[in-house]
Image 1 (cartoon, helix red, strand yellow):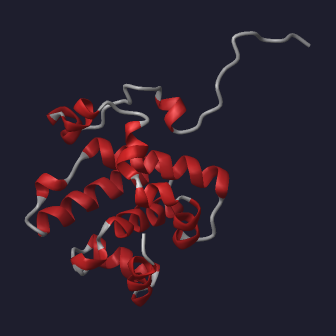
Image 2 (image 1 turned 180 degrees about the horizontal axis):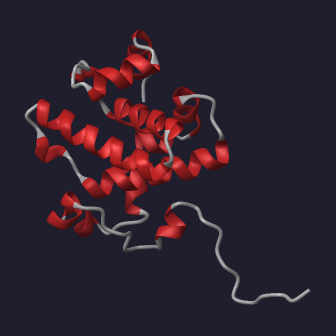
Length: 157
């Protein structure tokens, strides 16, 4: 990730960025990988996760369609990345998307590697995964979102 990738985003406030994205007026050069992460982070910051997932997913598909590239939309990648952002933000509590990106460089520089921790390549390449969210096949959804593991033994007080 270069400083330039983030500095180009400084021209728009978060509200302007989201509005232009949702209205399909955003300059496509701002909707690179950093732009995807920014939009996802902002929606998760403003809405509960399930609502943000639906809102972001619909907005992303609409924007891709506007750019004549609806085939680029991938439901499983979209939902998985949002789940990872939500889980990390729940722990890190970054003040803004720039701080989140600084603390989570793997999401920028190695998103495919990150998803490979949870999904087989064949799964992500499947038509089913492209069209609808598919659960991780290398780990559990709970592991993906960082949920605490249940202990096999319980203690009685």
